[in-house]
Amino acid sequence: MVRRTGGEPVLSPLTTLALIRWAGLVAGVLFTAFGAGYCVRGEWGAGLPLLVLGLSLLSLPLKRRRLLASAQAAQQWSPARVRAVLATAGAADASRVEQVRVLRRLDAQLGLADAVGLVDRAAEADPAGH
Image 1: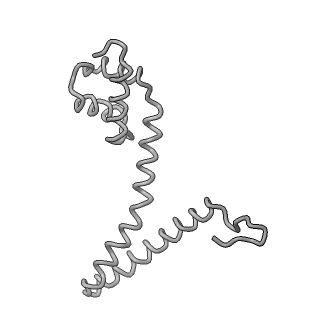
Image 2 (image 1 turned 60 degrees about the vertical axis):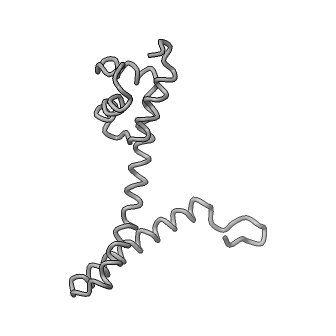
Image 3 (image 1 turned 90 degrees about the vertical axis):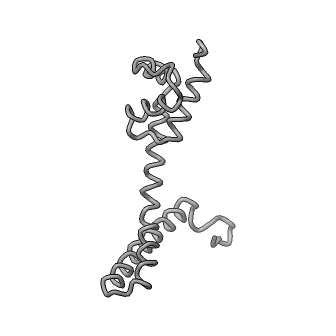
C-alpha cells in the first residue's frame, strides 16, 4: 500500500477492496469475451480455458451475494421462532434433516449451512429438551 509522508495510507482498505472487485469483474468480462471469440473461430484449445476462467471470475460476486443474503435471512430467525415454526409444520419431533428442509422451504434465501445452524441453535435453546 502506498503511504504518504505522514504515514497514513493513500487509499482506504475498503477503496482498495472495491478496486480489486472492479478489476476482477473487468477481467472476467474480457476473459469471457476473448474465450468466446476463440471458440467461435474454432480454436477450442485457446478459447475454452479463457471462457472457463472468465465465467469463474464473473460467478464470484454472485456467490458472495448469495452468501450475504443467506446470512441476513438467518439473522431474522430466533430460536423461539424456529421452534414455533417447526411445531406448526409438524416437524418438531422430526429428524434434523427434515427440520432443515422445512426451514429452507419456508425461507428460500436460507442457505444449507445457515439452516442447519438455526436448527441446532433452536435444539440447544429448547427448554423442554425435545
